[in-house]
Image (tube, rainbow, N blue to C red; front, side, top):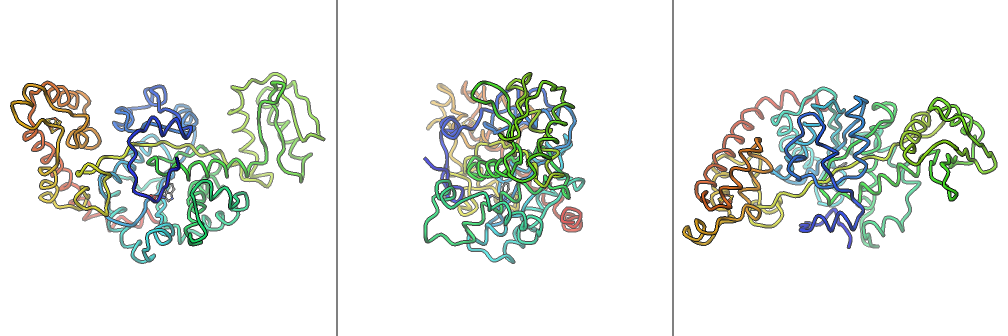
Length: 438
Ligand code: TRP
Ligand code: SF4
């Protein structure tokens, strides 16, 4: 199986996907003790991660960290897109630096848009709604890939450590794939890693919250980050922890610098073998590796490297479209757009197929199926904040006490409220836009 980030596949079996690609389960211990955990975390919508432990630790210890995510400006913004920004705003409230890439190069390469068209969509559909939804301008940068010189420069340099076989194996590119498309995953890697450049805040944990279709880009970014490191810290064959210099220049200086860091970390029993470009740490354990790795990453920029920490990621489930397939801007009847009028949204909701039984009698007798109901999903993902209220709907649906007509009406009313509020707030968004694009 391959994940194709540019297809419109829906993924049914998230557990299988997780296991097949080595994505970790987003277990309770990763979010339960965070401040006021977000509903998408509490309710299992975020189901997987890579390296989130590092983010968890940064939050708990109040260390600096960053979020980078991207938007594809190739259509109208719908509820599925809202999820990412809901997550971003939550993490913003916990103190993360926020970076958002407008993937205009990718949209140009893969969706046939001009850069001008993508600009228009990015501003009026996405950024305006982000502001209306409550994204704050402090420590928040939104930029266009095509206009970010530092990202573009970085992309060229990062590409050195990726070869064609790897790109074909990851993305299934063929001889007919256009070069800008081939290049676009590297641009995304540039997006993800540039936030760790000195100029943008320096080496620090970075979280990329995405849908699971983006995992190939995450894997690539993590590989590239690792490939550009000057040091490698591993468990050796005879079960020791070793720090190895990966480059051939300035080996002595690099070993000296590493030794100094190891001593500040209270490791004194060191065996240095310059010929192997290695330092073995006799008193370290495997559990010490992340700590050592992070400390060494921080000194790499001064030694001619980047020191990129591998970016962390979380993966959310996709919200089902109103038609039962994936919610997609190319199928307007499947999606509720944030710029839909309240009436349009209401109509779409009232026409949605539910998890209810065929007749009222049957539903009263056997109950409905909220787990297969798009209306319930709207509540779960977007419309109901209080977990008790949500459970109340779930239970009374299952028991046959709640009927779909009433339930839909409630969803429609709440959606109308949300959309009216957004419409109102979008009016002032244009005037604030520059604060985010600075
Ligand atoms: N490829 C993403 C999409 O299809 C957009 C994107 C560009 C992105 N750069 C990113 C996502 C960096 C996450 C991180 O929607
Ligand atoms: Fe869905 Fe509500 Fe009907 Fe239950 S009662 S099936 S949650 S619409």
